[in-house]
Image 1: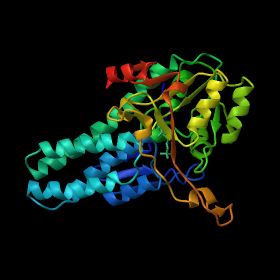
Image 2: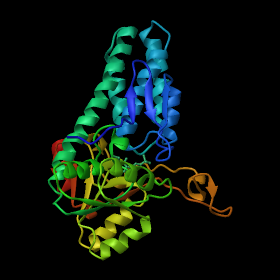
Image 3: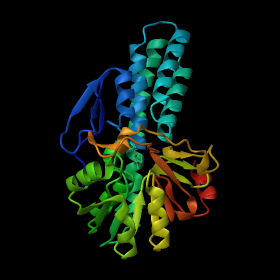
Image 4: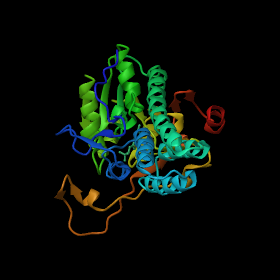
Length: 344
Ligand code: MRU
């Protein structure tokens, strides 16, 4: 039986309801809106986040935007919709799922012949995208759980549970599924600076799932890997290139190198909607640069003098560090180019 009892995003007949992840774990606050601009802001501000969840929110935002358009001319409608999709596309550049959802919504808008029908079709497509992401994470979690043995201690980075996916989770989904199968697993969660998705969200989700979790700072990962206390690392992904190079939350690359150095398997779990076969290698993945305050401040408190700051939100782990990529269509191993071509 699934232990998941909360929803990061819900479609409520012409409105969306979003669990504001910036307020967790202290407060469970829900936002409701029928405006696509509000949803775009929620994506930008990480109120809803994680690659699959960003894709779902983007689809609902486009549906909301479409419902607001007042015209009977399909040409006019499509032009107005283009502006809306441009706003959504500009929210976060790295997650492939965002662009995958936009492409699916655009196809529906192009195919329709009459404005009211296109609007209905767009809402239906957004709900379908949501369902497909949820089902994909459920499947990949089941497949990935086969890699987890009873008694394993697993290290993870950032947050990849139901909050990040609107479904079961990717890396965290695998862990939750293994636990549901009766395997006794323990998790080490990197806090994930600068925005602490690991400390705030992963620990919250694992506690809800009754899975033992130990919170560590990002710089402690090497210590525990070197002491032989970690059986495997599992992380999610924001975009995977055709050769298996994977962009994920900043700090993932360091963990991958440390895992290889210490001969610990390093798994990436992601739905196929995160794979971008149009990019040959990870060097082509656009990396989001976020504002300095996220580094100089922790939850509103300034921790640094006035200084230059860099804040790339993601890094790229070269495929040579990855033991396997877990998707809903199968577990891919090296050579990734062949495996990825086979499932996309
Ligand atoms: O900036 P975020 O919080 O959206 O980053 C999220 C991650 O990096 C996740 O690991 C990734 O999206 C995979 S989520 C299933």
